[in-house]
Structures are given as C-alpha cells and as structure tokens.
Length: 302
Image (cartoon, rainbow, N blue to C red; front, side):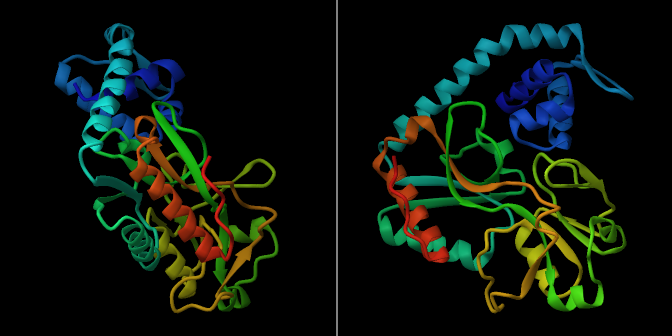
C-alpha cells in the first residue's frame, strides 16, 4: 500500500471531509480523491461512501485507518532514518521545487548553491503540488506555503510572498478598478494553489469574493508575464522581486488592502537531515540568495 495514500485516508478519517484532509496533507482535493480511489482499487473494497454532501468513511475504511495509524507513523520515521543514513554517505541532494518559480531566479539560485557547495550533486524536480510529494524521494522542498506541515518536517520561511492582485498600468488605465465589485467584470488570472479554491478571492480582513477566472495555472511565472502583457489582473504570490527585462514598476498592486492572503516562500526539510552540514550550507545559501535579491542582510540560522 502507498504510504501517501494511507496518510490521505487517515486525514479523511480525522477531519471528516476531503477539503479538511487536503489542507492537513498539503495537496489538492483532486489528489485526495485520486489517492483514495487508488487505495480502494488496490484493496478491492470501498473505503469511503461518496455522496452529495461529501464522503463518509466506511467500516472497512475505519478498520484500516485504526490498524494502520501506528504503522504509518513508524514507516514515516523509518523513511527519514533511511534517508539520513544514505545522506551521510553521499553528496546528492534531492530538491523538490514549486512549479512556476521564475526561471532566471531558479537558475541564479542553483548557481548560488553550487558555488557555495561545489561538491554537491543536485537532483531537481518540479511539481504543481510539492507539498503532496514530500515523502517521495525528497530531502528539501522549496514551496509557497501558509502553515506548518504535519509529519517529520521543519520549515524555514525565506521571504514573505503574500498573494495579491497585480496588473500592468496600461491594463488598469483601460480597465480601472476602484472596488472589489469591479473585479467581476475584469479578466482574472488565478494561481492554482495546492489547498485553496480557485473560484474565491480572499478578502481582507476576512471573507471571500466569488469569481470566474479567465485563466487558471499553477505556473506563477506564466501568470506574472500574462499580467505584464496586459492580459488581465493576476492573483499570485508576490515577493516584490523584479522580473527579468521588466522595469520595477511594470506591475501595480490592485486593491492591496482589500484582497489578499499571507504566504511565505519557504524551505521544508526532513528533521532527520537538519544537522547535516550540507543541509545547513544549503539553508545559508538560500538565505543569502534571497537577501541579495531584496537588498537585505540574511538572518543567521538558529
């Protein structure tokens, strides 16, 4: 049985909804449903009943969840111990990166890491749902995250990247936005985050605005460039970093006091690897890179 699928079943059992399980595990609701289906197919029995009001765990599902809870915890610990043992004898680092990080930043970041750690061998992967794949051949993940993860992981926030509306000055001149009600008649380009609905814009300090996005993508870089091209108003994580070949004021924040959500670009690393010199060197290199991009002094690691 797949360990991640078992973690999904445990989350559904604990939280009672697909949405709650998705938030707990750090993946989309579609991923939760897919992993439940895969687990049911592998066992040949239904584990949840699906209805118009959501899902209900069956007796077989509860039996499996109750009996496997300790096994999943033990397996998670075992996986990290095996990783730690292997990591001590190799200079390979398996990095999982969120899809949509600007390529010129990603290239400079990797160059910074290799300059600081010339003996390191990097294995890089990208995913639109990196938080859902932490258990899959990953030592370190670079993600846009909101909350701490469950499990044997530790998060180091690197830079605040609050989700905000941004658009080009030319687009706003032709399509002015003075209040949230104006957004319903504008072309909206929405980032598909791992755990949030795409048809609701979060309002500040609370509430949400129902919307019908014109473009939905997990690629933040693409959405920024669509906004730069005047295709509409993008709702994306915005770290205040300048985009390549674009002036610093090319994108304007739209209704920053009315629409938004806090988020950080963070490093998530397995706790069992944190004391390894190469992991601490990586953390330092990442902080140095982010600080250089923002003109700040990197904070020391604790």
